[in-house]
Amino acid sequence: MTKDRILVIGACGQIGVELTLELRKIYGDANVVASDLREENPLLKGTGPYVSLDVMNKEMLHVQVIRQNITQIYLLAAILSATGEKNPHLAWSLNTQSLLNVLEIAKDENIQKVYWPSSIAVFGPTSPKINCPQQTIIEPITVYGISKYAGEFWCNYFYHRYQVDVRSLRYPGLISYKSEPGGGTTDYAVEIFHDALEENSYTCFLKEDTYIPMMYMPDAIRATIELMETNADKISVRTSYNISGMSFSPKEIAAEIKKHLPEFTINYQPDYRLAIAESWPQSIDDSVANKDWQWKPKFDLSEVTIDMIANLKKKLKNNFI
Ligand code: NAD
Ligand code: SER
Image 1 (tube, helix red, strand yellow):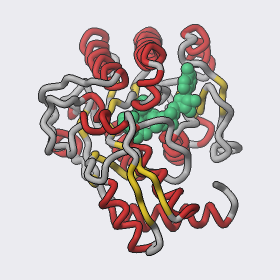
Image 2 (cartoon, protein in one colour):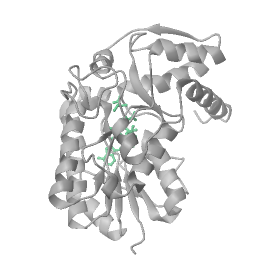
Image 3 (cartoon, helix red, strand yellow):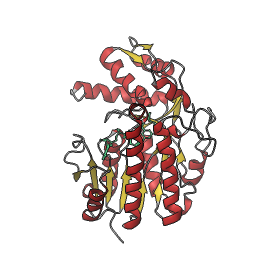
Image 4 (cartoon, rainbow, N blue to C red):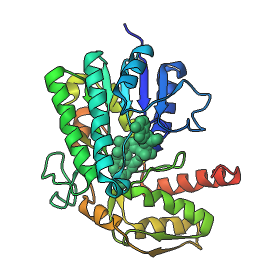
């Protein structure tokens, strides 16, 4: 049997750091090669191999896959929804070409498994707002959503046409304290904790009643690994699975934070990101993921709030923020 050798592309981002560390626990530090365009994240330093890599350079990517004897690829490099609207052409180009480069190399080198995340951003204003189903009307209005929806169909195509075992999740907005979020509309739900602890107040770029589907990072990492460890014959969705964690508004998360930091105040100055958030569903139906590979989230808003505040307080005390 071939030994698993994993390449994580975009390993220094919000998800990449935590996913790389978790994969290293499972597969062994030396067998998980982290890569990114930017400098190695301090949390990854000394925990395993790191290569500097631009996923848009297909030849260099191909060389690394062969040189490192890679058997699985996790592709996390992307431009997210808010940054994408500032440079739509770049977002389209990175988000789709990076995936095509990986899928073509996976086909040519018989890579065993590929992971590529999609997003709730595939959904648009015409999708159902509450408990948005796996299969429904999908008409995204952001370049990020369009690139993710196109990507889902490339995954489906490479699976059916070339038997590339590529798997995907439509992550909700992710909340975490280890590494910074990278330019999404849902970043507010991370910024709010930082500002609450550092300034006692937060100015939110959404409205108080803007509900978005969200998930705590440990649930997202577990979902990713559970999907990747599921037997291929159980996977009925080869575009991307809906997964759900929780759903809340800025007013609700502020009230939860206030329980622990009574002085905290929030005010609202909505900007262009409000229209992005309002185009998405407020909650997601993940019953297909539950049926196929028994997906279930663990964290709710009150548990996330307690954990985020405790961990960010520790980081602040040690000057890690
Ligand atoms: P991020 O922006 O924090 O990290 C992306 C990483 O990719 C960065 O470290 C960046 O330097 C790297 N990168 C960018 N261009 C590159 C290139 N050309 N070559 C190599 N690396 C490059 O993003 P994230 O939040 O960790 O998201 C990872 C994936 O998950 C993305 O596909 C994103 O769309 C998806 N996703 C994220 C969320 C979320 O809330 N964080 C939600 C839904 C989906
Ligand atoms: N968190 C992401 C964003 O806001 C959703 O994919 O862009």
